[in-house]
Structure formats: C-alpha cells, structure tokens
Length: 324
Ligand code: 8YV
Image 1 (cartoon, rainbow, N blue to C red):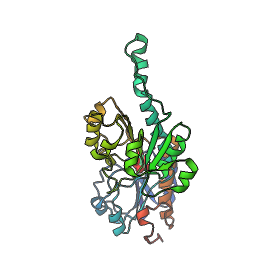
Image 2 (image 1 turned 90 degrees about the horizontal axis):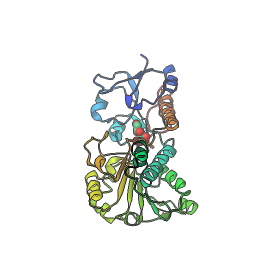
Image 3 (image 1 turned 90 degrees about the vertical axis):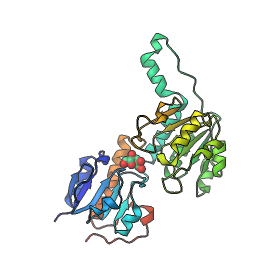
Image 4 (image 1 turned 45 degrees about the horizontal axis):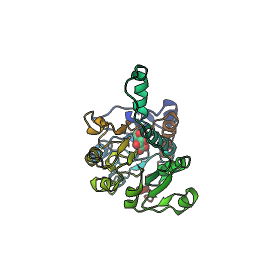
C-alpha cells in the first residue's frame, strides 16, 4: 500500500506545484478538519496550528512525521510524539524576515495612526470633519526586544535604520550581536522599565506563558507601546486590558491573541489604543511560499528515507528509524 500524506486546511498556502513533489512517493490528500475518521496508512501530516495531541495521534496509528507549517510548534505535543516515535519538524528561518517586517508595520502603523488615517481620508477629510490625532516619532525612543532569536534579530537589524536606542533581554546573552549592532543587554525588569516600545519574540512554552502580566505591565512606562507578533498567551490579556484602561501603558499592537480567532467581543478590539491584525506576520506571498517549500521538504526527506532537516530542538538528539 502506498503511504499517505495529509495536508491540513490550515496550510492552505501550500501550492500544489510544491506538494506535487511528494506524489512520487505517496498519495497526497488535502483534508478537512476535524479528522473524524481513522487515519490509517497516513505516515506524515502537514499541519497548521490545530492541536496535535494524544487524542489526534490515537487516530493515526501509522504516523511517523508531524510537519508544522510554521516556526512555532506549541500546538504540537512533542513529548507525546517522541514517545510514539513520531518526528516533529517546523519551518525556522524562512519567516524571520517577513515576521520582522510585520512587527515594524505594527510599530509604525500604531505610531502614525495609519488605520485611522486611512479611514479618515476615505470618509471625512474632504468634508473637513474631525482630524487624525498626532502620532509619535521613533527618534530618541528606546526599543526593547524580548527574545533575541531569529525574528528578534531581524527586528533589531531593521531598527538600525531608525534613530533609536535598542536594548534586549534574552535567556542567553548574545555578546557578538551586542558588538555588531550596538544593542545593549539588560535584565528583564530593566527592559520593562526602559522600553518606549517593547516587542516580544519568544516561543510559547511553560516559562513564557503569561510572562507579561499585571506586575510586568506595572513596571512599564505609562507612555509605552507593547507589540506582540509571537504568541498571544505570552501576555495575560485581561491584565493587558486593565493596563490599557488604567493608563499603565499607552498602547498595544497585536498580531496574536490568547484565543484565535479572537472573539469579536474581546475588549481589546473596542479600545482605540489597540492596533490589531489577525495573526498574519508570516502571510506574504514570498514567506508563505518558502514555508511551503520548507515544510514539504521535511516530508520529502522522510519519504526518501532521510532524516528531515528541520526536526524540532527537543528531538535533536532522538534517533528515529529511517524509512526503508
Ligand atoms: C503561521 C506562525 O501563521 O510560524 C508560526 O509559528 O505562527 C505563523 O507563521 C501559522 O503557524 C500558520 O500555520
């Protein structure tokens, strides 16, 4: 029996000319969720952000590879996969540049009131009604980066075109980057205290969940902007609502939310000092194509009997039997 590869609808951006490469080795099927049926014969699945947990894995007795279409894999129970001898791959690097572009789009969009200004031109300007409020300049501001990994670094590189001071906090100090980009390492509390713009670039894991809560927001400048393009649950949303309401911080620019899609009645969406986008940091033609090629490439390696190149960190030393 030919092995089967499933492509989840969350990876809708995997074009057929990319997934076609798999057809030499397997039957490829674009599927719908939820996966109600037993997934017998399925050896690999390309997934978006749907949870891949024990319940899902029970339905797929032949599964050998979960290929995440994305860099974050908090939606996948890696430990459970490892116990069952299932490899997990992701798509690092290829979305760092596009993700950093989106972070800067949020920063500048917020600072210059772009969404409001756009609607003002279309509906009120010619009638001389109302006005767009003044925004802010980046000049003289301090940008704080929480997490100087691949995406944080791209955000840093772009910041060098702006007249700003940049500070960062990370679990691992990056002395070479400090020298190369003139970025200053600070402890977490100092990052909170000193940043005019605090941008978050950490993975979601048990220690980063809720890393920004009421205590942390309390330490930030009342004029500060918080930007999140990483994962919603790193910020405690109800603490953020309180902080924005009570002037503990000035604004938030968010691409990610605790629950996605975020409900229309999420208080954050009714606040004028919140700029929101629907988890689209990686949604550009170029980046999504690169993610498609990378995630499909991982599956292709497995099908060819090779170890996939982008196995997640937690499995880097785990030996998996290769396909014969
Ligand atoms: C994707 C992401 O939108 O890479 C990630 O971890 O969050 C985004 O790039 C998402 O994963 C789509 O599956």
